[in-house]
Image: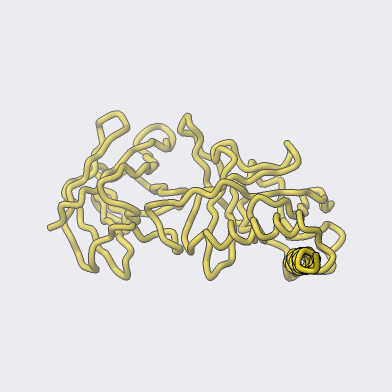
Length: 286
């Protein structure tokens, strides 16, 4: 009987110690319940799983009046660097002039943290382009709502909740948004170019010269016409590098052996026209 009694006492002591261990684990963050603590751990694990680099991610808002441009399909470019996340979003117009990572009531007292716009060029599925305001928004955590206030052309701050989710790695870029995962060594190469799009009247000369420096590739492309006054690559505008003869541009090459959409603006017609093209730079380098 004494032996049985001792076993019962030992079992009770083990149960009590186990309960203390469980309680200690859930009280790592004072004032947060076990369920909330579990959610926090989940978020931390999600953040930690994102290596430095560039991702495409969903940008979700609480209002149909505040959203990214339709041309962007609800997405932005999420950059992770040194463990910190920032998403670049291109909005639907220029009517939102500033954003603030926090509440509207704090925006006027915290001028240094007000986000300034960039001018982004978005391209719609029909080939039309538009200039809109873009912003680099700091992201505290994925899959969690956070405060993001905005001010429009009428000068009034409004509170909004936003979230960033579903990051998909951009396989063609690293953290600086330029370097291909299979970029060749630094040097100057002659590269065959496949050209598609347009009416067929204009072409780009092939082969083209590609220079790789510090892991970034730049191609010198020469048109068969002198009438191209700018090109758009990934929303960035590039001007000719020559003043006489056929139009010549220096544009970035994010990847080889994969189609790169570009836009060429021609002044050969009665008024300027932006035309969609696709360039593929082949990796058989010489």
